[in-house]
Image (tube, rainbow over all chains, first blue to last red; front, side):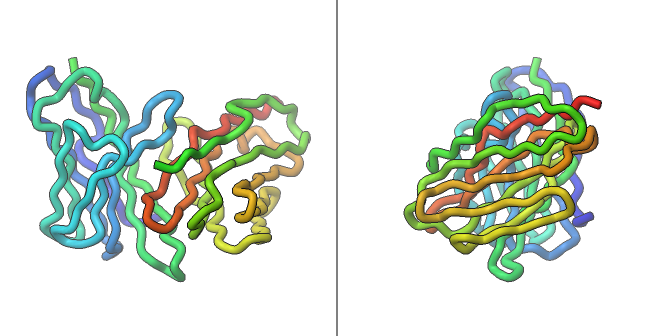
Length: 114
Length: 111
């Protein structure tokens, strides 16, 4: 298994509070991604990073920000959580091995916003 | 954002049946297509990475084909087993775009 962990694994928070999710990798892969899992939509990309301090928006970036100060860590922040952000969040990593960008996923973080 | 479709949305088959499902995507600027297997309460796991028109990949009883000119890929499972029950996701990658995951095909294999 790829060395990728997420913390916390579960979190319950109240509407309006800030929340930060952490993704940590030990593979030294260049690319890191944050997805959310929603019924009927599969996985949707929130933000991604292509290097330290290099990030860009994905399909559903509103209400989320990210930071990557080290190769191994990619943080996802909900500045003011809303109930619509209740979801399971997956981090993924990939490297350009043979040019294929195969993604390896973390175990997921279940976030509930009450 | 790429428009990625997968069909059927879900299907139920009996153990031992063979089955297949489809991933459709825009063919312009194609770079690669990934297939992932996603079991309930687990994380998606990569099955295949396909890049060339006409590619065929195989892993055990599961195989996939790719047609980049018409924008589709088929995933086949031969002799389905209960442990094949999962959601199968495709994710095409086109130049200038991010990976976009399809909505998935949920397969249930009944013993």
